[in-house]
Length: 265
Image (cartoon, rainbow, N blue to C red; front, side):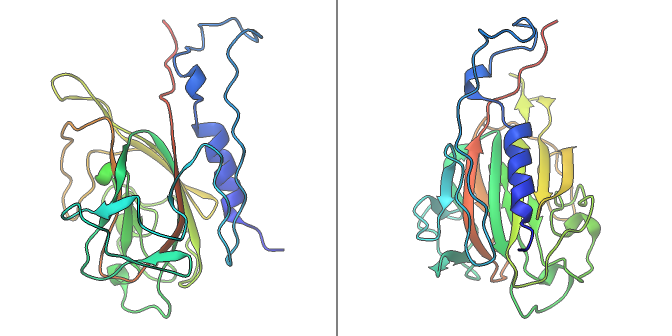
C-alpha cells in the first residue's frame, strides 16, 4: 500500500484549524475549565481518502464545488456567464483562452481542498509548465505549477503565496500525477474606515506536507508588484486561474469556518 498524503493534511486541517459554529462566540475564559455544561462541538462525519485512481469523499459539512460531473457552481470570471472549461472522465481541464472561473457562492474563512494534475509530458520551463492558481476571495493566490525538477523564482513555484512567500519545502509530485492542496484561509478584517485590522493568513498542506504556516499576506497577490490591501466584502468567490496550460482539477470542496474567539481580558 502506498501512503496517501491527503490523510495527514485532511485530519490536521479538520482538527486544528476548524472552530465549531456552535462554539464560535465562546472565549476560553467564558467557561470554567473542563465544564461539562459547555456546548459540545457539532458532529462531522470525516471524509474518505482518495487514491491516484479515484478521489475520496468530502467530510459531511463540506460544500462540494466540483464532484467530477459538471461546472454548475462555477461561472466565468470575465463576464459571469457559463464556465468554459472542459469536463470529462471525472475531472475538469483548463481550456486556453476561456478565462478564469470562480464560484457563484462567496466565502470568507475557509478550509479548501483542491486536487490538481499538471500536464504530461511536460512542455516549457519555469512558469510555462502547468501554471494555474487557486485564489481564495479571488485575490490571494496559492500558486499551481509543475515544480517537479523545474526551477523558477521561489515565490512563484508550486504552493507559493504568489509573489510573497515561497513554500517551506518543495513537495511536488511528477507531472501527470494527482496532487493535493489543503488550504486554511483566514480572510482579512477591515475597520469602518477601510483600514486593515488583521491581515489575511494562509496555512497550506501540499501532498500532506506543511508548506505555509499561518503566513500573513501583505495584500493581494500580483505579478511583479505588491499592491496594498483595499477594503472588500467579508465574503467573495473562490477562483481558479486560466494561465493557458491544460491543468486538470478534481474533488474540490470547501468548509466554511467560524472565527476563533480571542481570550477575554
